Length: 396
Image 1 (cartoon, rainbow, N blue to C red):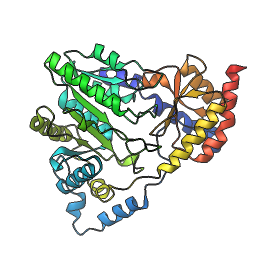
Image 2 (spheres, rainbow, N blue to C red):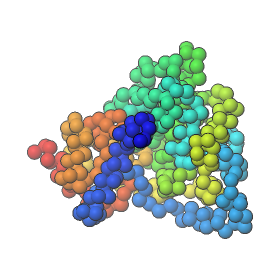
Image 3 (tube, one colour):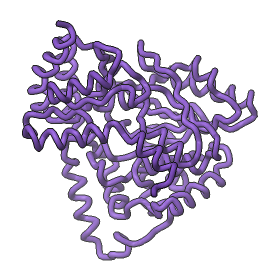
Image 4 (cartoon, rainbow, N blue to C red):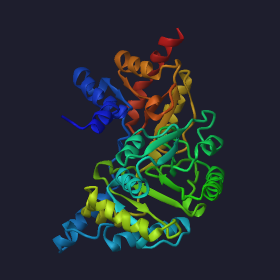
């Protein structure tokens, strides 16, 4: 018999993965060309050629131990130094290898930092809509996830509501920008105001509140919009990153945590993170991918591909009568449903029109659906009649 904890987690298993699995079933029944799967944020782009070559070059190195062996829990020192130098070049910072911990993707990094910072019963606060797995990551360390209700006019964080929710047990405020599922980028003004609020609440409560930025979509920003770097504005800021999207490597599970010297109890935090990487079962981030990404730190997938999809999908959906905020980054569109019950809307879309969408309630914001446009342009083009017919099934 499985544990009571796992019973709860299985019951609340990811709606995104469930929809993806439905897509596999429908494709087998009707043919893949007749199913329009917008459920999973799985890039429809090959990694840059330089990434493939980097893997080949690493495998050709003379020392198998250097490529496939164990290393420091935090990762290869030379890789971490290269990552730190890349960050410094781009954001005007002054980090070193001691501030970088290589992780098993962004999810692994978040689980590590959650377990490092939070005791059972502590709270992490995030902003709706949010990636649904955050709730499970908090549960993994017996902490509690609380969500600030969404400001659906802009999908910027509602700081007035956040201030009401912060209390003595608040340990982490978690942000995700560019945001999954809205594609909104949190503005510089928002980050500055958020930082000032957290500074004020730390003094008021006499506690340390860490701002954790989950940034797997940082490089996917359009129209010249810059994603603010949180360590410039708040001393207790920690960044989690993954190359899953920027290099189209989601299955390789490679990322890092950036922990500045300025965070409270830096030495203790860093030592605990190094231990957590090992005892949580990761042991270390994949050695081959550490070596490979270190050769590709200035590379990025073809953002223009996603931008064209963004424009085509937005134009098609709005022409068909849908409402949504025009995404500034990532590769998701968060679309208002013509009825309140977003789950029923997704079921109709799937069963009657073979459109696979994820209900906004899975992200803590009902009345919307998430559409992942990291698909082929042909999928978007061919899906438009189905989207139009779906809307007409309500408006008529």
